[in-house]
Image (cartoon, rainbow, N blue to C red; front, top):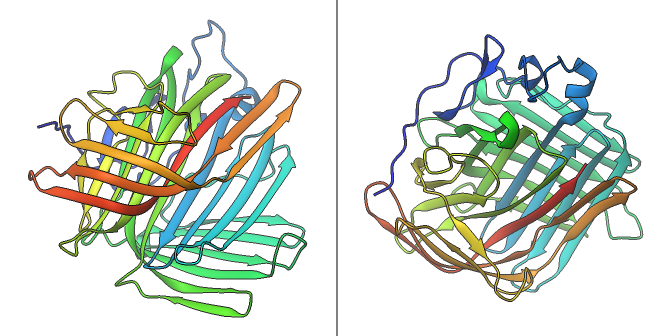
Length: 351
């Protein structure tokens, strides 16, 4: 069975100007990729402003209970910044979507998740993310005014990031040409309130599971990847979550970002291959060569966004759908998924 070492992190991801490579439990105290001495394979030093322009950063969140699925994301791509929110009723099929995009990067994504916050503001749109891992929580506040796209929307969500109950997993991976990619992910119980269209949803942490991810990287001018994420409860009542990706990272068998959580305990997963014989709108087949990942993702609702302006192009397709198949944890226990809701991500960037 596949294994890889998961270590305890030190104070910083970058030591003496070099990024560490590996997998760690919990987040680093500081992640500042601008302190990397030589992030590009150029013979001359690259100015800090140029390094900052090439550094792409974003955070994603997903929350679901028995009926509703909420997804939210915010990113700073330096050539543009964006936020999006998506709420889906799994019983009736109704959905609410909000998306904002603006040129140039006006937000500074946090270098630490211990105690930091970021406010993403647009006209009629407020999105605050408060990372408070030193108090075992991540909080989200959304306040969206009514517009032609739909009714007003308000949400307050709290992720219970208690290391004794659920362990975040941090990875630092190598991209082609010695570029660095960082991610911190976790699956946790979530409590909170959502108000929209005259309805008030109170989220019960005993039945509500959330995923969050913090991503940073010196991506190539052209970059693409496919990521699959799901959360919920299996037939045995265990809370599970998984996040697997196929991308351009090097040495992926030794080190990758693929993780399965069962009742808060993480299991490193091997590299996966995601194939789409009928295209991205049909079934996605997600498999590995170790027999730990064997899933089929069937998109039900698609949410596409992007930016296309001269030399800048980004296409972000995040379908919501059903996962069917099996996952295997480090103890050899099987997690069976039968029409469990989750999301896929199919992203292409040229920026």
